[in-house]
Length: 391
Image (cartoon, rainbow, N blue to C red; front, top):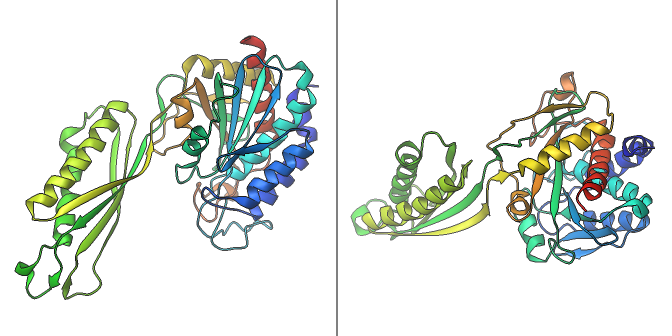
């Protein structure tokens, strides 16, 4: 019996685990309920889970090379309107990005690998990660030693994708950047507050903020290599409490996303310089705080092609690869991929009908649970095969 056949036998259990985490969605770094559930299941399956920062880890095997299997498990701070009977009831959390699938599929992979632990020709390390949506979780667990003791040699992660693409489709990139970097920033502009009727008596931080916003757009137009993909967005601009008061401060928050390391370095450096110097020109000051700092996700070409080969061995119906995928969204698995050879793939969890109308992060998004055995089997089989062939 191969791992896909076993995953099909465990399909309902995987779905039950997914639905439990979906209905009990949590966000951010501190996810006590989800973390306790994952640890309980791993223990039930015969593993010995332990804390790793705000996440959970466990290992199987007997020395040798080490492959890391990672699943994020956090939800989004938003209401759910999916209409699913197991929808999160809080109105403030929703698994609208499919991380409940990732955790459930990795739990099943852990159970199957534990059943065949005697046949493993190395070590599998499991990483159940919080706070991917805020780009904090991977850094937290790396800082707490997830890549050490035992030292990780390779890493693999999957991400489910809604829409209308059929089950069995997987998307990857073995040649270039798969997902963009993300550098979130907060610019606090300080001026001098005064009466709105006497602007000459103060320094207007709103005016400074407007000029900073305009100047930052010129970085894309005039300083970035046009062959690179670069995005600089200001998504928040907050200032003032009344129409006739020039406030003391104004706050701009935004994000920089690029597909090239050199473009990222340029934009982050120039964002800081332009903000600070523009504020000085108008008599104020600007303080920059970096909220998130995640590199582009660049998968290891050799490992990616190797994993694709293992996936094809499983005989999963409709298994079809779509290479060359690239997206301007970001993924903090890039923190892992920057340190060890890694690969990251999308697995379609789409519906061919109206249930596939909505994208990830939409309150009405729905994911097809037929992907559960596909993901669980790929995780387990690819880990076992990689260890066998990379002793």
